[in-house]
Length: 366
Image (cartoon, rainbow, N blue to C red):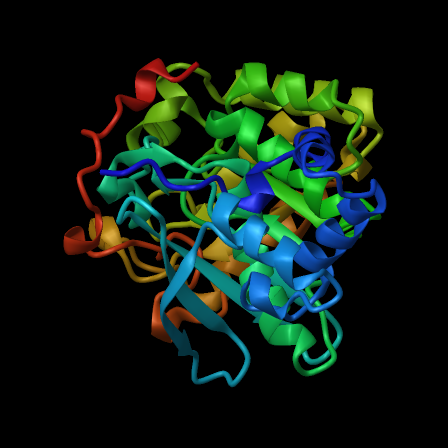
């Protein structure tokens, strides 16, 4: 396979400035190009009409305008949620979801890997194994896909959640580089406080993120209050157990002064009893500062493992028990289930995987 041209979103400002200087272009062209990449509705270099025609031709011969190509896009019956299947240069694919919220905001749910190595029992993406990591540009270009659609009707992406395919902290460098691009005031200008990174609990990377000085939100997928249950549904727990993850969460809160969210997928008969809630509430409260934590209770969506949702009454009872320990909890329903765009439902059909690598062992992640 021929080596593709680099995507412009994988070219940093210094490299772009050097490329322009070699061609005798003035320094202000850097800002023009970066603005065109992040803020315009252009579909390719030819449409960036504030640049000279000759320069656009040179740029097109050196850099791809985007690293993703739309293959299909479908809309949910809710009239808001949309899911796109995007093709990468090597034939692999990822899915990304746009979740508008009644005109108040537009959240882009983005992927950081093609597939995922974590093999969580309830997650369709985990069934794919890890195909490969995405580059920072491939992560950012998912947001650009939605941004272009929204800007054509006078709107914009306001929130970004790293909750699509893959484990963001397992692809740490590109994931963080993408955050910096998305929050750069000269590029997308999305507030860091409107960016949420989700993790299944890769403890060393949680500590590294806490030291980055980025005021982003962290969501930790816990899904069980004891090691036996969590190891059954989340193999990563064999490396970092519940106490390890809760301790890292407490360190994150202490270091960043940011409120942290625990994601807790409710699986009927597995982790949804009042006793489970009691155990979870006690373990969170033992870390102190309970006001700095919030638990999102998410009824499982149809997918692998044949798991069922608890009754609404059982879910509300779970929340009540947590609140008795001073831990705020909310029962949340995923959007887009009818198009398999809900939590744990993203997956690319086997025929879309290209020549990817074998699934990784989730017990040996760095």
